[in-house]
Image 1: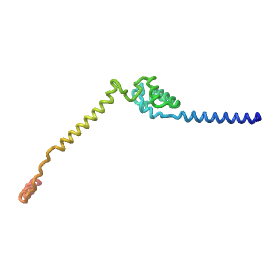
Image 2: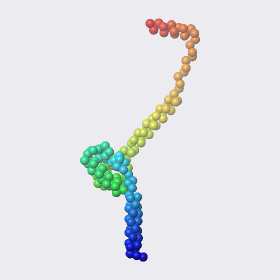
Image 3: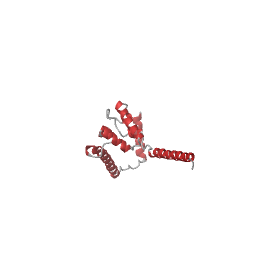
Image 4: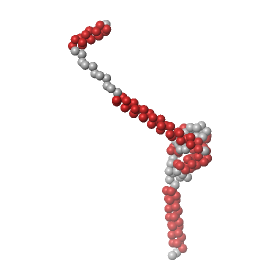
Length: 155
């Protein structure tokens, strides 16, 4: 085999390997989340509003960090973990599932349950209430007297 042919084969093989490596790295790093998806679940640590609604310099810094993490193909949970590590647990818009924050999950459920139970009891009581008796139809003389009385009051 000539040197030129060997060099051409090696160059072609190197190009093929480089192309497959680039294709694999591009496929392996497909972002799993986007900025709006994360913005709705984290807070601006300065103004205490959702990051999606804040335009403070702190919020812009948090967004830049999130964009950087998205470019590194981090998942939403990994991004939120990084934000908690950097800014503390108050950066999360949802309360944690333990301690005092647990009441933020339990109280609304209890209130909804009590309202539904109250509506069920009210509906049951209304269905058991005796119905008003239907009065018998008026005979001809009573109907005539009623019409005469009503006519006197209409004037």
